[in-house]
Image (cartoon, rainbow, N blue to C red; front, side):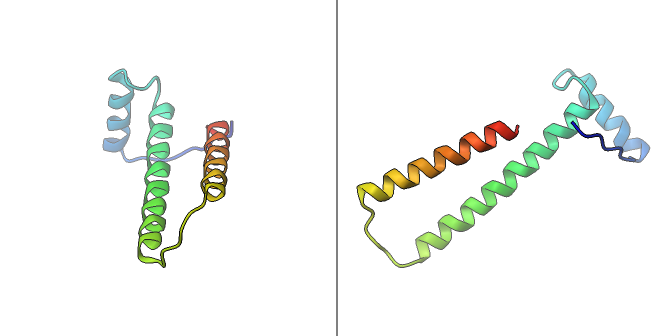
Length: 86
């Protein structure tokens, strides 16, 4: 794991310390990692929504059983890859 040092104004540092002391996170680092993961998930969700809207606005075409099989395989592959990163 790589290290990153950040500087925070006193009120933000105090807030981060309070959040980690509240028991949901074991440390300030874990709290920050959780915030970053949440932001990453929001970005992925925004991209997915944009792609879905693009698909809804596009030309209709029938999906075959082979199409669904390929889509399912791709999704499972991406989920597995994402789980391996975290």
